[in-house]
Structures are given as C-alpha cells and as structure tokens.
Length: 229
Image (cartoon, rainbow, N blue to C red; front, side, top):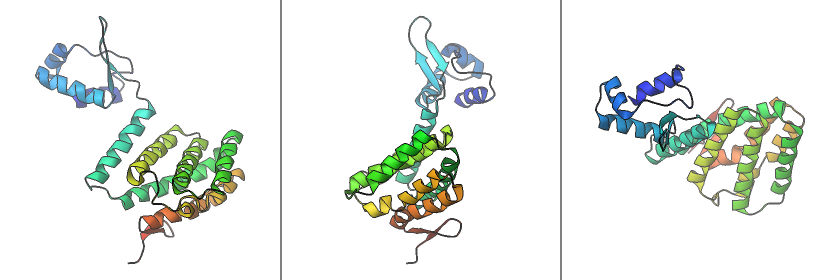
C-alpha cells in the first residue's frame, strides 16, 4: 500500500495537500487488512511523506516534500549505513570529496557579493584559529556557505546531509588538527572571489588533503587513492 501511494505521488495523481480516503476505504481499495493500512500510513508519516491533521476535517494528507526532509533522510541513511558497516568512512569521504569539488566550481561561477563577504569573514577567522573544535566548526560553516553560494538548493541539501554525518563521525572535531581542517581554505576563497571555477576546484583538492589523510586517503589524478601501508 505504501509503495502504491508513493507511486501515485511520483506520477502526480496525488499532490501536496491532497487528503487520503479513510483507513477503511484504503483497506478495501488495496485489498489489505486494517493493521496493514495503519502500518503503511505510519511508515509514510515517519518519512514525512504524509502528515496527520486532527479534528473534524482531519485525516492523512500528502506532505509538502520540502528539501529539509530529504536532507534529514539522506543523513540518517548514511549514518545508519556507517553504524552497520555497509558503508565505511572512506567511502563516505569519497562521495563528499566529489561533491565538494563540484560545489567549489559552481560557487565560483554563481557566488553573490553577500555570500563572498561571508566566506571572506570565515577565512579571516581561520587564519587566527588554533583551537581544534573552533577550527572544525569554522570548516563546516565554510562548506555550508560555499554550498549556499551555488544558489542550488539540492547542493545545499546534500551539503547539509554531509555536515550532519561528519558531526556523527567526528563529534566536536577535536581529533582533527586545525591545519588539517582549515588548510587551503584561503585558496578556495580567493578563486571564488576571482570567479575562477578551475582554480576553485584545484584549491578545494588542496583544502581537503588533511581530512583525506585522516581517512587514510589521498587525492589522486582523478579521484581518491588509498595511502600506502
């Protein structure tokens, strides 16, 4: 039943705000028991695909499907995969590495004066920071601002998910030396200011070297390679 409702949303049969029939009608419509209907509705509500409204005109309605739901779902899925070891931190970082290079390129092309000013403010703070936790927080703020500079909501959403996972992996970041967290940031901001996407990509590679090394990786010619034992 849940899969059929998702399909109807994808095909445009159901739209945000549309009200579903009562549970009894859904059971008849799909030929399933009421407990099965309740379980399916709970599953869809947990995923924020449906919302529940109380009162006389209440019931189950299709949610608004905001990107914040996607961000939360992606971060939770990655975090759970890391916990059960169907995904390891190095694999996670490989994906983040590719995403950050793309974000740097697009930000260099699309950045506004206001986002550039915020990036330069973070860069200035980074040049004087020696505290590990502060450096980690500054780095995550830098990456979030860079994603916002792309003016691409999907990139901002995926970046938010990556940051949430990094917090779960690294906690307060006290295991990361400031030079590893912040090294090369100046070059990225300079390239973004000059609106040079090629230079921004190369500078981002340098910026990510410290964290790559933490995961036992190094930037290769095209992607990431394992460090020699």
